[in-house]
Amino acid sequence: MTRVAAVDCGTNSIRLLVADCDPATGQLTDLARRMEIVRLGQGVDRTGRLAPEALDRTFAACRDYAAVIKESGAERIRFAATSASRDAENREVFVRGVLDILGVRPEVISGDQEAEFSFTGATRELAGRTDLERPYLVVDIGGGSTEFVLGDDRVRAARSVDVGCVRMTERHLVHGGKISDPPRPEEVDAIRADLAAALDRAAETVPLGEARTLVGLAGSVTTLAGIALGLDAYDSAAIHHSRLSRARVEEITHRLLASTHAERAAIPVMHPGRVDVIASGALVLLSIMERMGAEEVVVSEHDILDGLAWSIA
Image (cartoon, rainbow, N blue to C red; front, side, top):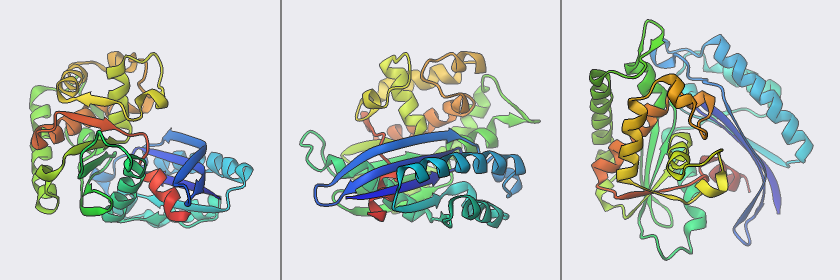
């Protein structure tokens, strides 16, 4: 048994998993699982740089996580940084800050590495399931990018494309520093066009039509699942491995696109940091399901964090 700590820092959120890994049984036992919305990727698509206030928020979360890791007695730490820090000109400021706080250098992982960790984290526990056909297509909808990974026991094909809930929101819904509330029809059309082009790029590498089970990861997908289940509060256990039909995803997406900020914020399972970007995230998932012809998506709470933890163990 090995106690490990994994940190995943993306465009929108930074997350921590402290777990005991038992490679002999294939069991991963959570000791702590945390998430903070820090919006590290704020403005990166436009400026190419990490904003000082975004770095401050991220470093504050790192200091909190450092205390949790120290108290847990984790033997090994791995810190993966994804889309926003790959794109930023001043990423070394971020790297130095994390190293000072956590004592570990963040790995600015490639899209392919991100895809492999996500696939391992999402599918390792599905090995014994007889009700889910293979191959799986794992889609990890992040803030800045979306990963597509096709595989059965191992990855067969993977592609990362630069469309995520934050990037689509900032690119198409922000004007003069303000977010359209709700989005205008022409803005939604622009997001859809962007997504169609991104899906074309993904399909060049990943044969989307070969997938038999779609597995959806990350906050946009799990939030949609919570809405579909009618939860009064976010419940990870209820959301994990729930199934969402395409008709339900379409219904919720249209509702979110027609809602104001206040209406979205009033949804019980909505994290405050997702209010402005959830409609774009929902549209990403819907576009993927439409393109694949997928009738449902299996929602997973286990993702790149779990894959990182296994990579350490």
